[in-house]
Length: 552
Image 1 (cartoon, rainbow, N blue to C red):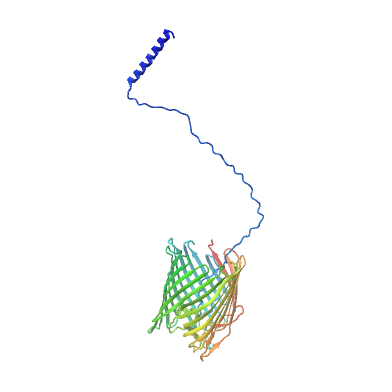
Image 2 (tube, one colour):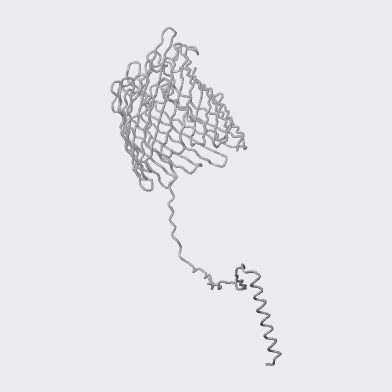
């Protein structure tokens, strides 16, 4: 290296050293930092994907065996005993035209005229209000053989947001009958002498919880009040009040406990102005029962303590239903007791030609029964029951000993009977329904009277309802029975001819709002006597039109 090059290197090094020392001398407080700059970005390695290739299914040539278990479309309820009591011949009913609002009018050789109407209001969800009216006037071939009925009423239902349903009804009815069954027929009476009018004002209110409470409680209290009276010179008046307080408590799906309190109060008066006769016939009941329910077994075990006047009775209340798995056969057993209320209003509904009763008594009924019921093929149903019955203080009706046009109410201390009831039915939806029932009563013991006056020993009922076409309905009914015993003026027992009453009717829709209907009663013109000396109407025909409106 030459001298000049050495001098350049030395000079440059000195300059660099001098510059560094000058920089250190200028700022001695600056912190040391390191700046790193990089373009590297971490990424995940792409995962391997599995490819699925769908393979076509194998062809299955075997036929599957599909088994269906469809329940029978019949409803069966716990057996409720039918009352054994004398009943009046009811007017042949005509099927109601099931529309929201309608007016039905007709005329015939006996009914002149016939009017029936019904009107509905409300939202059809939570509020329902109905008003209805009925009137007819009928007249037969015999003198004074006529009666009439006029009734109006209203019913309301309201469902609250708190799972309650309130129901109330209020109605008035006036029934006129004429005592045309006097003997001999040559006796002279005026229309006023023979006219018997019953008027009733009745109201009822009850409510229930639609679904059980969170504690499994179901309740349905009700109150019914009625005022009943006649048009006799010595006025007969009666007030009836029935308060019922039932309660049911469920314990799971199988057990339940029922408790109920009933007060049935009757105040009967005969008022002639200066003299007044009063009879209070009050009945109090407390029912308690335990229920056990499974798909194949229903057991209802309880007692009903009762008080009437100064008498106490303990009534049994035991029932059991034993069913097969398919519900096609159910065996029924029971030992039960109940009361038939003794009231002027109830007696008049049984026999409208009765005289004012001198006193009122309740009928106590005790029954031991066994039977079965079931269904076949989903459409056919059947039932049969045999029972041993004991009636205490049974109300019977016998002709008076003057001219026989009125019936006196007498009380038989004890009647024992064997009852056999059978019933069959065939039903196809709402298009076809046929039923037949036979009721047999053998009165094995009557303690004081010679016979069980006015009680029917054999009775047959057959009914058919058939929708033959879309707008054509047909129905027919048959009522046949063996004549009951009646007491003559000499106190001996007599028996009349039996009854055979065949009825038929049809209804045909001609427009959306108009229907034509026809009803024929007692087609065979069998003029039988349900009550001695009172011959029923012969063949009668009634027809008319129904107008319905405001349909949805």
